[in-house]
Length: 79
Image 1: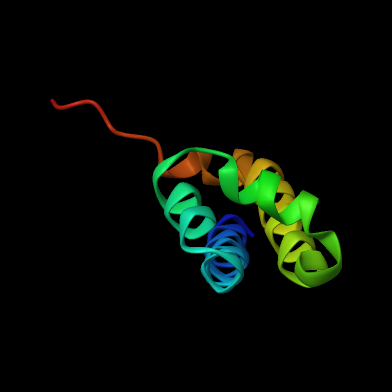
Image 2: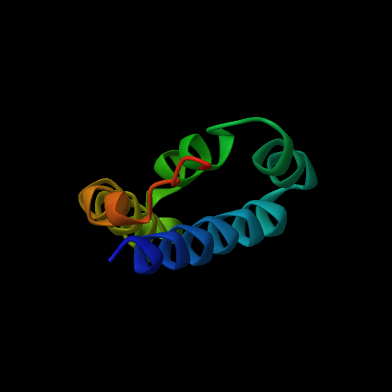
């Protein structure tokens, strides 16, 4: 579930960045360089970014839910 969350976040985030570049180059550059600008852009232009924003949010939820399942992959101390 954790890896699926990573993939969904990447797909949704990339889709939002592509839409931001379509709107204006400054939105696109801001989405790439400044944290959370892509989310702000997606909320401000919700009609155009409804599906990618939902994909992104589902990915974040799967990341949070899937983190405990990754605890078995914890680092093993050196002997």
